[in-house]
Length: 349
Ligand code: TXA
Ligand code: MG
Image (cartoon, rainbow, N blue to C red; front, side, top):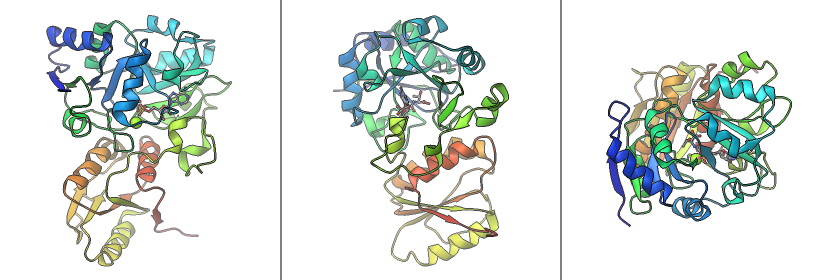
């Protein structure tokens, strides 16, 4: 299959291109598109065959459910039921935006989308191209991140093509994604909201609206294979580049010294460092700056992991000192990329 390429940006919402891409989606094809978080791989959520082809294109296990994307609150009614006043208030506060709500599903939502669960994940993206595409398709759009299963999520169209060229009908190049990590997945079916995956809307932002919001215990620790987590995606090793990743967490100067020490023991391997200190010098083959704050780190993390792979790096040390806000999402993705291989420095205990 030849993958068609469209160029549609927020500054130039090319109506003809949107119509073509929307028609491909509506008629059962796969179209990758930009959102404010990462690129999504969309299919008509009402067409089981189209949704099944997402799993095939990504090599994604069929027990990992998809997020349904909408372009209008009116699309919600046919997808979800039993929305509590607490849930309503969060939908109102964070949609459109990098926020995914888990709600009870309507019977007509296919079990192929939800992996047989009685809940469905719904997201109303803020990105103008994503919204215009869903509108043009005229149907809700099921979309996971547009990477091969297990690879870091794509934050530009080039990354999408690296993984998906020839496997999908089309990709829309809409430029770089601003947030760089995926949406915050929040279970809204209970009395209190539960964060199942930290992301573009922070814990602090949600807490401001609902003070007793909780973070699922699986978010910050590894998941044993025999456990059944609430969000099936949590059990997979995600976001991992080809290179081995080791997180070095703690005060930056101590982190830098530890990384230098580790690098000395890596003779014969192509080494990489992802650093929070822009001017620090490391004896590594490839040094990338992650940014000095958590928001910058989030926006560069997946891009950097892919860049290390492109340069043939075999082992990456990622320097990390957590701050509030985006820090939780960055830590979660880093730990996953590292399969929980973390060296703590500067601990008093
Ligand atoms: O930012 C994002 O969320 C991107 C863009 C494209 O919207 N999408 C994304 O999709 O990251 P994906 O499929 O890579 O991740 C969806 C996550 C998975 O961890 C999945 O297990 C969880 O959401 N999920 C989906 N439906 C669920 C449900 N009914 N209950 C619990 N977790 C669910
Ligand atoms: Mg994904």
